Image (cartoon, rainbow, N blue to C red; front, side, top):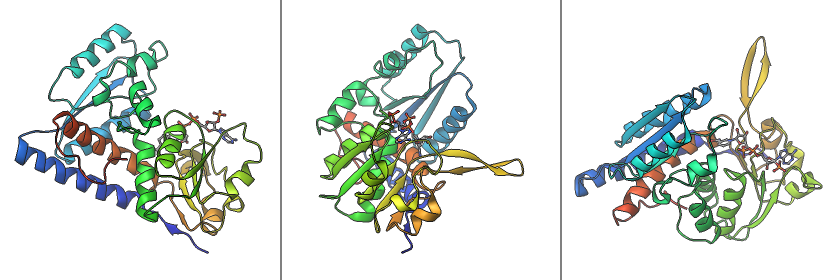
Length: 297
Ligand code: NDP
């Protein structure tokens, strides 16, 4: 069997198109421009690339983009004051504080200072609780993107066996909640899981969010299963070069799976597209307007 490649890059383009259409409607019919504020503390090169890309795509979708770049030694009080200001700014509907923060800043405290209605990353404790109890919430972008691709590929996910490898608050746990919300039978695997290959072999859906290059080989995959590879790992490609690989061994897995996301070009592009989607959703909810269809969980 050769797996269908789930093209996250193309899918993300359709999500961005839907977002742009909805943004245009909000402007025309209601005179509202959704606004996203991104806060970056310090000069982590990877974070700078992400923030630039987020800003560019926000503007391309017709939204207002605001970037706050603060020095690495910014005090907690200063950062909290900025978040308070953004919470009270009616032109801002989404606030994202780029993680990781420098060590002297308490990430939980900072994230929980964001107005949950504007928490487009879905990391605020209120949104975590709402998602866990099956209520309307802001959903973390990466798992939301995975869910959209799975729904698009399968239609209904009801009754399918899903294994999520990884239990982080950012990917693994919310992913498992979303799959449960769509009536999958969900197993969450982690570094202490016994017989991981056997656990994975039972799954109709495998979501790998570990951060270990090519850890999941093809012979762990049930024939015909759908594999969503969240991992982004940079490995040595020889001759002084590097390349990106996922947590799944793509070549062997794609000979067994029914469908698989590549790395790069799978989950990655969906994450920023879902950030834009969350910003529009937050804006609509704040103004009591209908939410765009197909862009929420
Ligand atoms: P974390 O490091 O926070 O979590 C990794 C998880 O993997 C942990 O729960 C850990 O288990 C588990 N794990 C580690 N080793 C093993 C093992 N040998 N067997 C089974 N489970 C194991 O990572 P994140 O969730 O933040 O990210 C995971 C990957 O996804 C990374 O490669 C990251 O770069 C990528 N990522 C990609 C995004 C995208 O946009 N595509 C966005 C976010 C992340 P335990 O809890 O027991 O330690």
